[in-house]
Amino acid sequence: MSNFLKKAFQDMAQSAKAQHEVDKAQLEAVKAESKAQWEEAKMTPAGRQALMQDARDKQIKDAKERTAAAQERIDLAKSRQK
Image (tube, rainbow, N blue to C red; front, side, top):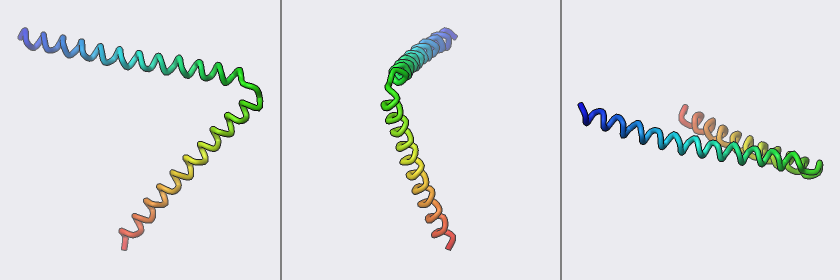
């Protein structure tokens, strides 16, 4: 019985350490995102427009990649139906 409790407490300690690392990483991410938002808020209108255009370009690129992947899946499905 004591081995069971010892193992249970060791597992709880490991779990707590792992959760602490997760919490620490998430806090750092939130801090970085907040700083990024602050810096973006201080941008000039021209800079903000350029940033927004970059975001739109990335979205267009991602959408085209998804469309190409879907087309490959369609072609594969059609070729297997024969």
